[in-house]
Length: 170
Image (cartoon, rainbow, N blue to C red; front, side):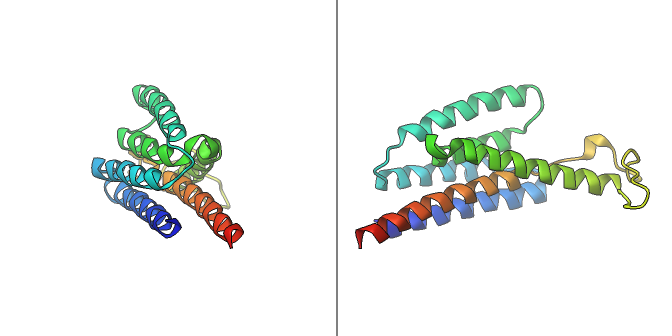
């Protein structure tokens, strides 16, 4: 059973990774990826004895807050759907550290994109001068990269728990 759970965790990270790649390339996260992440979670939950209710609770909260962020134009719909699907995996025990991981990684990615777009020179620090042809509206943060880091955190934590369970059983 543990081997199957490890496979599900690997598929989970692979799917979110595919979402990050498509987000970087096309500024879109296909709905099929978010749906697949949720479906693999259902299969994982059937093999996991810790319960599935926590995952649903966290996902509903994330989706609700995501609607608010989307309404204010602060997040994209694909990002919200993918983060909601990933939240299923976090459950209540990993939700806050996962959100912190996503937020910190997202901030780092955003700052890196801003620095690149503004063409900062280490000698003149021309932060207020965008590169020729670059406008603030053109700046885009592929947030699925940050969501992928949250997924890796979740999978790593769950895998460590599975291995600890295996070790203690032996």
